Image 1: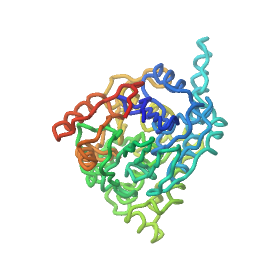
Image 2 (image 1 turned 30 degrees about the vertical axis):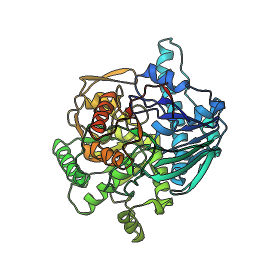
Image 3 (image 1 turned 120 degrees about the vertical axis):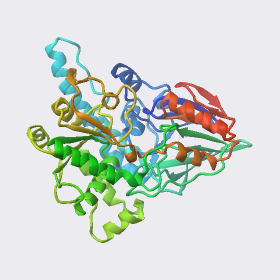
Length: 462
């Protein structure tokens, strides 16, 4: 078996790993790389392999940094099946179309500026029509069920606990007289998060591709989320300002709404209006309701008692552009939740452009921000940031809540690896280099002697 690392190496976006088993090629994930614009353009347009030579694909979950380049993969010749859990299939049906729509709109907006300056116009990575063309290739497989995407690779999905329908993979490989157990963590989640069940545990494997997003960090306890939100909301009301929340439309937006629902019902915060400004979030919430078998006990209980956790008085879902634009002229405290999560595209850019120079505004960061993204620049408090080619002063207050993270932290990752066996070869991906290096040293201290951090384009044979 061979592995070619094609993305999310020493970075946290663009997840892609190509396996060769019995002469067949199996791709794990096909995500968009997010970062510096020129680098992102080059990486996302090209692949480190021939798409038409890939026989099948297995997708760990629906986040765009894992699924977002699938339409381009198909556009360039891939024709094989794409295996994922049923919620992931349904989420991709709305997310990939939305991704294409956003790219078309953002390029259209950018081209107006380029045309005025007489510069070369851009084209979207893929169109809505091209995204639609890839959807027929998806195949839904539930947790615990084994399937064989290519000969000699028996794959079983386990719950990764990262987002709705997210999976880690166990691949039992047979090549001639040789056999091995291989695992891919996908994005590993945390225990005690709302809506979804806690992560499963895979045991005793020969090799593991493991994420390392927070390989050297410990999160604030998840139980502190609501207390943290109360403090942010009360302070924003005192400042008479808006709270702008960049959030992925999948999982993170629903999680925030879930917690706000509880706070509003218990009257723990002033009931200021909440706007979810994302057509995708509306469709995604419908997918959540469609798959109650993937809920944890608390969310299942609420739904069984006709208490929809994604609906409450004062919550407004915005779908039309005209309604979104009206929020720019709204005065007084309110909460605006909008995508994209790393502030690289979509309606969140317009809300930031219209509000971050106002010192009464709070920008609430509730997820990981990759290097060189606008979201990271906000977290790092750059004095000015560029949005749609224009400079804006960052006068807004920026608050980051680590308690919201859907990724495993160092303790979670160490516990997970502790059960796979110290004989395993571990390849650390999906982490900035300093996080991966620190995690590697922690693993070595616990007796793991075969830990490496592959570079993009590295190839190894197991």
